[in-house]
Length: 230
Image (cartoon, rainbow, N blue to C red; front, side, top):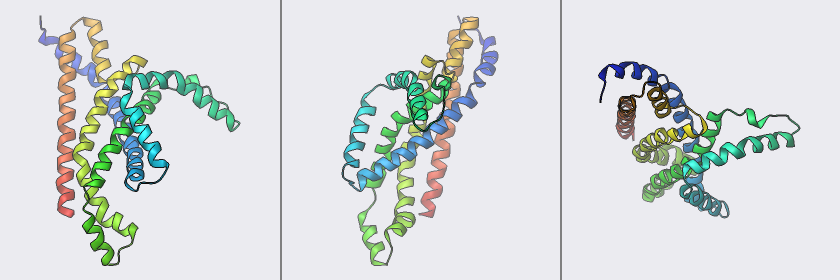
């Protein structure tokens, strides 16, 4: 029922998908955090019109399943890119767009809605009394944000941002639906060759756990280091 001898060969096969998985996760994490931070600032500063648009965006992308967004991007992104390119007089074959690019765009759009909530929560945790004290010392808004507010907001957001990274790692498994091979997809392909599905999925679980542990350790150490400075 369980063959321990296939664990090592399966491990080497599945490890081959780790670099691409981590690279896609990192790109999605960075892009979604940047976009989510901009959305959070719009809400925090209560900018008219833009605030309503951000709220509508979050409702849409938090409510629609990620796999649906992936398929919408898969069928709609190539034509959209081709149309936009034609508007500026260029030529681009939208159907040559790599599937991993489509996956990154789709998941970035989804995760940005959740990252906006993470950053918004961190912004709301900032004590406004510190702002009043900074203004009394002659700080400008830019100085207040850079020297007082930003360091504290980053520290407050780190735990949730680390969780977001692991959510992205797991969401990448949906990419197999459009033929993007991540850790989970590679475990399925490996098991399909030797029919040892339990062993392959067990190896995938171990790899995910190692990555989760590494991310948690990095986040904890970064948070402790920043707390000392702030």
